Figure (cartoon, helix red, strand yellow):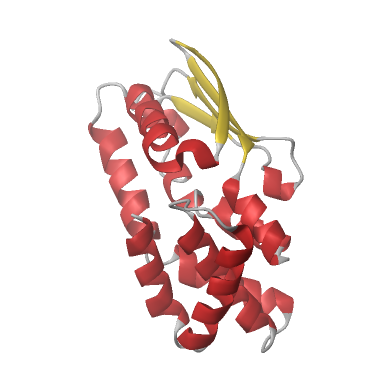
Length: 193
């Protein structure tokens, strides 16, 4: 999945900054971080593009350009796919928490750490260590963390509390100064049509 995200990001950022400069910046970031994380190339690419844009644009504009290039290509697919899965489910709570568990284990892996509280009516997961934040700190661009946080808006916005019977709360993130990134799902009684 990260290779696809990188490819889409590159297609969308290429009109704003030279790809060779982005690649050079990303390589420097990856070398400074080290290791073989499956998330390193993506994070370094986005951070490298931002560093290149900062030499050309004011900070707010550079953040906006990077955010659009990172979010827009995939947002409709993630949103619409999540919404369709929830709409079709007999138990949308089980579906969305199942998605979360799968991503925690099979996508995020050891680069992130999680704590969980779970029962039949709630799934409360807190990210305690975020690889993205670490890489962005090493790259000297911690302000870019919120762009990674907002990537989740595509699937979060697909949850309709009244229709799906799921309340989702994420009041803060590590990148926004929180101690954790809470992803809290609670089962609620859906509204009658």
